Length: 198
Image (cartoon, rainbow, N blue to C red; front, side, top):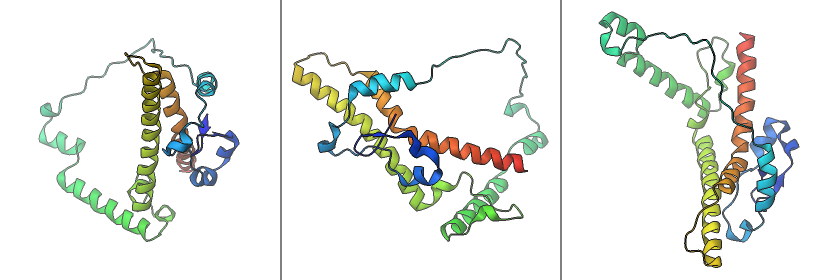
């Protein structure tokens, strides 16, 4: 179940493409005048049926491979396995150079020689970083708002021992973070297609 800024149910067909996901705000706003639009009973009933059932299975055949500790490696083995300080500095310079290109609007992924790649650096650009932080803040605010609403409701009823309804809080977090899940799945499909093209 997805909700817009006014906690109104969003049609799942809006998830048909990246542009819709990018341009649509899925996360709640903490404006108190809008908070009571949310229907808790609908959230419990509808979301509970959509949550995947968690299940753990274990493979019947297990292969154990012992790994030597870092301290037991010879200097030559250590140099082959771990990055040196020089390697780390080269990586940092390359990352900074890539980010600067991205900030200038250069599509670094179109580099035919494979020198540049934006994967994993998307949120290092200030605009994307601010958008991501705001989204995280809105998700956290939705959860905190629900906790506060539950405490206020319990106090209004005169309850002395306030016990928060974890299920509702969990479902609100789940509903608010679905935009992140959808984007991650879309990015995984893009990565899969890129890997298959190689």
